[in-house]
Each structure stands twice: as structure tokens, then as C-alpha cells.
Image 1 (tube, each protein chain N blue to C red):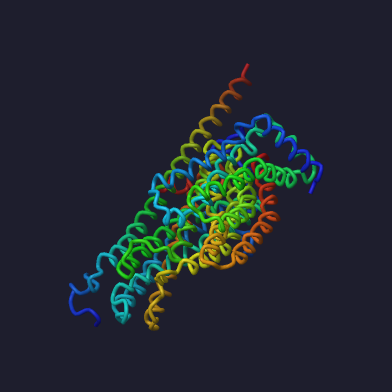
Image 2 (image 1 turned 90 degrees about the vertical axis):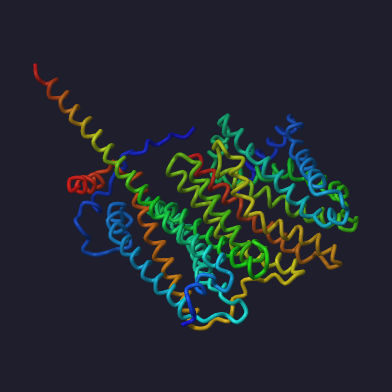
Length: 223
Length: 72
Length: 272
């Protein structure tokens, strides 16, 4: 993988996002608002909220990550810089990986930070918060990686946003299951290590495979 | 014979709705899908034929123009 | 953005393959030429349709008039004779779709891509039927219209995978880009299916407060197995028939302006 391209694209994306701090904060805002809808929808009964809390937090994180995916490549495509970036040999893989990493840094990491707060809002007991935190630290990169594939496949299409959600969510289901399962395990008094290891394995597999697929998708979209 | 009369067959032990609902849905979809697919094929044929006719007309016109242009 | 190819762009024809009357030797690539495939599919489709009807008749006869009543589930278990075949077909067709899409992408074979696109809608329909029949089976046996057991849930996710593929290829106007993007998505999907299935089973065993493992098939008498096998073959033949005709339609949509197509159509048109 072209390290120079990776570093250049990664830093550039961070710089661009810093200039638009408000826009970069939107996914977190969505995350909080969406999760807060659930108590309003299902009622504030603490026992029930506590039960659905891990699932609600995870699903909202998933949706927030997916909804912030379309602009990943779109703005670079619009001003022509994407094609420039892909001129270098072996660039596609580096660009894909860098974009995914930047997306996680900008959109994913804030979700992880906000998650324990949401967990408290939904009445999650404090001993489960660390597990929720760890499960999201492992899970949100998976979402960024999978979302990158979706964003590259739907590059330049009108309904890219909804398409990405439809395409990527089924693929993200294992992460969702293992992530929420870890929290549920702690709730039941068991160790979450099984779930977290599976999630970790998923992260490694995605880390190796997803940028390759994203790079291929970019080439398909641009040829 | 398992069924002693037609009623028994249709009621399926009281679960006729589910059994016949399932088989009915399958029969319906497997009747509709082929019809739609054949319609699609016909439409593609018609479009291709029209395209061919248009191309032929254009080719004939081009030949006309070429030969009439050669005349002094 | 990208050039929209007009529907009937003249694609350079592989004259060497298509103009010879019939090949003296069949090779792997013989039917990769759309013309050859078009003719072959035209002959096979009705034959497969007939086979499907006969197999279905045989299967249904055995299923309803030979197979005995089940001890635990009574008559309602007879849904299994269509539920299991359509579920198998839904999974088989997804793999087939991914396979042909991959061939079309890696080997740049137009016909393979067309085949993949032809398979997708039928696969989605089978998945829908699997869910419908599964739900109809669950209602009398477990009291609810939907049960979140591992197999039904996996079937639902498979439907989402099909819908994602169909939505993606429909959204891309450029044919070749759509084919390749679809192929990538299908490959990613196929690779993920075992992971998804495993995680759903895991999830299901975690939440097994009530023992909701419905669909535990009744002890299968051999007549029941025969009926299921015949129905599976019937569904397979049906799928072939429908997919062949759809593939023919797509071939015409894409290559209708080419010489061989006009020859075929002119011949039939004159006869009409």
C-alpha cells in the first residue's frame, strides 16, 4: 500500500473536516437525537429501557455512521481531485484505507465518546458502560470500513444515501449482534470476551478486505 | 387414501388458511412472473425491430444522398 | 457524469463465433456469445417449463396423497413441501448470481453479467416466498405470524441482500459499470453470508428464553422426502425457464441493433 498517499489523504481529510467543524459534528448530533427518540416512543419505564439500551445505542450508531458516508468520496469526485488521487500506482487501496480511517476519526470516534452518555440516559447500569464503550471502539471502525465499500459503489448516484444504508446494513448485522451481545453478556453476569473477540476478528477481517473492495469499487466507478 | 372426503382435504385439519395461503401465494407468483418476463421479452423484440427499421431507413437515405450527390 | 450509453450502441460482434452456423465442437466459451445463448435459451426455456410442471405435479401428488399425516403437526406440516424447496432455491440462486456476476467482471464476459442480472429478480421472489410460507407455517405452530428464529431471520437478511443488489444495478445507468458494481456487491454478499448466518445462530441461542426453534422438521418419512425432492427439482426447472427468458429479453435490450439479432428477428418477423 502506498504509504505516502495514505498519509496525505488522511491528513487532508482531517484538515478539511476541521474547517467544517459544525458539519463534522452532525453525525454525533443525529446519534444523540435518534437515541433519545426511543424513550419517547416506547415509554420511560426504566427496566425496559435498560434492556433495549445496548441495541438502541448500537443501531443509532450504525445509522449515524451510514448517513455520514455519502460525502466520503462525493466532494472529491465533484472537484475532480478523486481521479487525480487515483493516478498514482497502487493508489486505490491507500485512498480507500485513508478515507475509511479519516471517516472513523471524524465521525466514528465521537460516536464512541458519546455512547456512554447515551447509555446513562437510557438507564444502562454503570458496570456495563465500559463494555459498551469497547464494543463500539471495535465496531465503529467496522462500520466505517463497510460504509466505504458502499460509498464507493454508489459514487455519484442520485440516491446514494439510501442505497448505502440498504447495501451496508445487512453486512453490518454480525457486528451489531456481537457488539450488543457483549453488553448483554455483562448484564447476565457473564464475560463479554467471547463476543468482543469475535468483534475483533470481524474488525481484522474487514480491515484487510474492505479497503481492497473499496479500491476496486472506486476503479469501477471511475473508469 | 388419506382424505376421506373433499372437505377434509380443503380444511387441512383446520389449518386450510395457512396451507392453501402458502400454496396459493406460490401459484400466484409463479403465474405472474413468467407473464411479466415474456412481456419484457416481447417489448425488447419490438424495440429492437423498430430500431432496425429506423437504421435501415437512415442507411437508405444515406445511399440516396451519396448517389444523387455523384450526379452532376 | 459518466457517458450514458444509448440503449442500442453497436457493440463489435464476435463474428468468428456468431456467423458460423453451428459449432462442430462445443467449448466452454460457445455460449458466451449472446447470439448462441439466445438460441439455446429459446429452445431450453419451454422444455424447462414443461419439466417444472410435470415435476411439480408429481411432487404435489406425493405430498398430498401419499405422504402421511404428521403425528405432532397434523396437516399443516405439508407447507414444508414448498417452504424448504423455495428456501434452498433462494440461497442457491444467490450463489449462482454471484458466480456469474464474478465471471462477467473478471473475464469481461457480457453474457455472464446478463445471466447474473437475470437471476436476481427470481432469487428475490423465491426469498419472498420462503418468508411467506415460513410465516404461514409459524402462525399455527407457534401462534405468531413472525418468529425471529435463526433460519427465518437469515432468510430475511438474504432478501435485503437481493434488494440491495437490485437497487444498486437499477440506480446505475451505465450498463458495464452497473454489471461490475453489482458483481462486487454480490461477491461481498456471498462472502458475508456464512458470517451473517453464524452470527444470527449465535444471536438466536443467546436469546432463547422461550424455545423458539420452529421449523424443526417433523420426522421425515421417505414419502415426505421424495415430495420435497421433486418439488425442489420443479423449482429448479422453473427458475431455469424464467431466467432463460429474462436473459433473452436482456440480450435483446442490450444488443438488439446487432447483425445477428436483426437476422433472428427479421426471420421471425417475416413468418408472423
